[in-house]
Image (cartoon, rainbow, N blue to C red; front, top):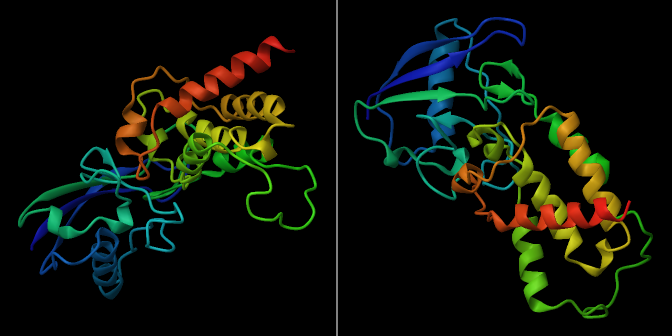
Length: 247
């Protein structure tokens, strides 16, 4: 395929960015989207131009590092798919593709398509852990967990922290990420001792990081590569109300 790419270029956080047009040719439909960008960057490097900066690591849909807004959709047109697992077969010859970074107040642009997602780290540091000492690994089934709770906890725990939910939300809210981290611990017996403090502290860290408020539009769940449902936010709200009432 031959493609026209319009890519956001920005040399630094304080610089003004702009869309720049590039042409890539002979793109294999079996390439991943990031491999296609690798081809472009190789051509730019050979021509003596600055390559496009973008986040990537495992390229297996696990680490959450990749993240691009492709034609206005976080992670691109395929549901439940990370950018690194999106293949060029989902595009057509002579397509024009717009590629932009996550755009949110809490995710400032570092360079080109790279944004600073350390606000997520601060939310985790506020309470996304279990600090009670547990000793060595317990025997299997030593602490019974209802099947429904275990399933919901595992579903929430699949969150990879990519930030697509923030990029898609019209308010720039990180509530789906925060809810996933709160929910998967709050549903397990080991998470009960700190359940109240966890939700209060993590929501406070979310708000302090300048994320927007959640208005339940559901755009976050539409682009989440792991399919985390909106009910996760409902659980966060219930926990928050109970914890607030117990102050």
